[in-house]
Image 1 (tube, rainbow, N blue to C red):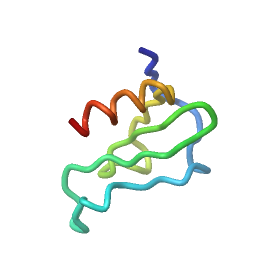
Image 2 (tube, rainbow, N blue to C red):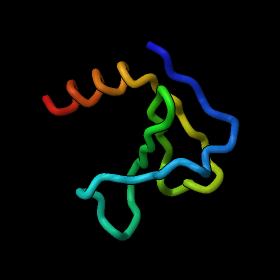
Image 3 (tube, rainbow, N blue to C red):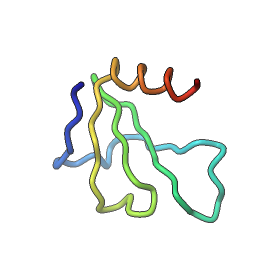
Length: 68
């Protein structure tokens, strides 16, 4: 599996979170699709927190498993 923490600028990515997430914050993650990878971050620290870069194949496998 290929996952790495991104240290560069990711501000140009279009971030979104699940429609199941409430509007009051809480424990949510945001994802953005970039060239060759999916980026994941904690919505509570979106501006300056860590960002993980996950390969598209690995992300697809994760989503498939999460759906059950």
